[in-house]
Length: 113
Image (tube, rainbow, N blue to C red; front, side, top):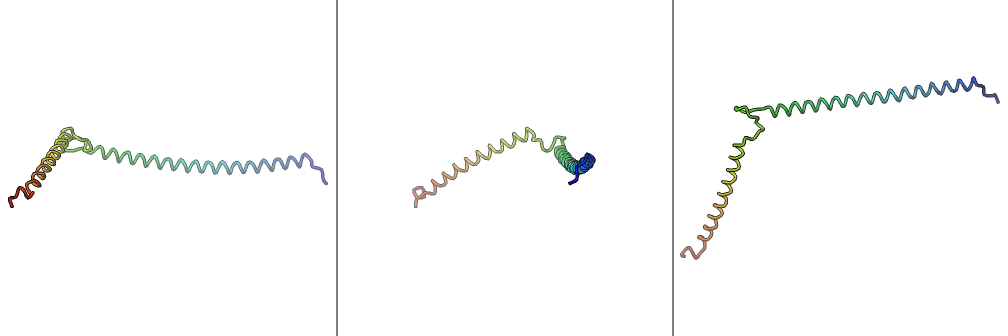
């Protein structure tokens, strides 16, 4: 058997360092590539959110003839709708009472037959 010299150990050590350097360079390059891809995806998401925000602003910026935003409910309109609902409720009660009277009138004891 040949003796292992310091020169041989040095050459092996340098070889190991070169291999590790290449492995680390590959890992760093792969990680940077993934990081770059993630940045591109973030930019795409930010652009999408910006587009949606612009669309939302465009929707909310629409105004009627009086300059009031269309999405805004005027207090007078709200009051008119509440009053209309109350009137419909009162009419429903009146119709139910009329139906009850008509049912009583339709009974045989009221017909005179």
